Amino acid sequence: MAIEPDPNDQPRYRTQAEAARALGALTQEERVKLMIVARMFWANRGLSDRWGSPEELLNEAILRTLKEGGKRWRVGVDIMYHLKRAMESVSGHLARKRLRLAEHEVEPNDDIPQQASLLHQAVTAGAVQVKELLDQLRRHFGADEEAFDFLVRRSQGMSESESAADLGIEQSRIEGVARRYRRKVASFKKRRSL
Image 1 (cartoon, rainbow, N blue to C red):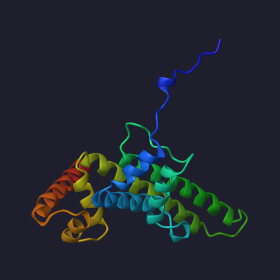
Image 2 (cartoon, rainbow, N blue to C red; image 1 turned 180 degrees about the horizontal axis):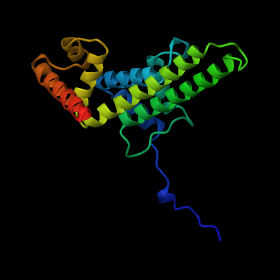
Image 3 (cartoon, one colour; image 1 turned 135 degrees about the vertical axis):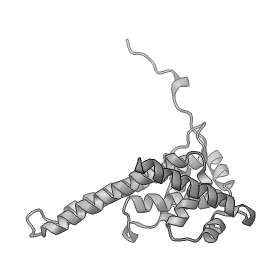
């Protein structure tokens, strides 16, 4: 006797029209945050111009959300979270494809210097360490996304005022956000040194 699945237990999804309205309602600040996330996924996955760009990654996540049979947006899930997960999925797919192609570009019997293999291992290990560090920092910053986004921009070489302007932080709040970011980084470093 087969048990019929309860239709109420099945995930419910938003319609394409609901997704289009939610995407159209994104604020400039939310779009900037999504672009930062796209850049982080792009860098963490080791993707180059050959595979597109972070902008194209975000656009692909949006297109898949709007496309019939694409990445469906579940009811109860924030649109920002949905798009972040869609970008994670797309960038992961591209990274796996990149690795598969890299494996086939080099013949196993070629005379490849051992140093090249060691360099590849070091780069791969370094990318994993960077991703782990970024994940630890994200958890450490917790709900303070503004301070975390500020950290990301500072790590990209932006000054505090450039970071604030990029995030749309008002002049009167820059010092407060910078102070929170510095405190979080200091406590993270202290915790890691224990």
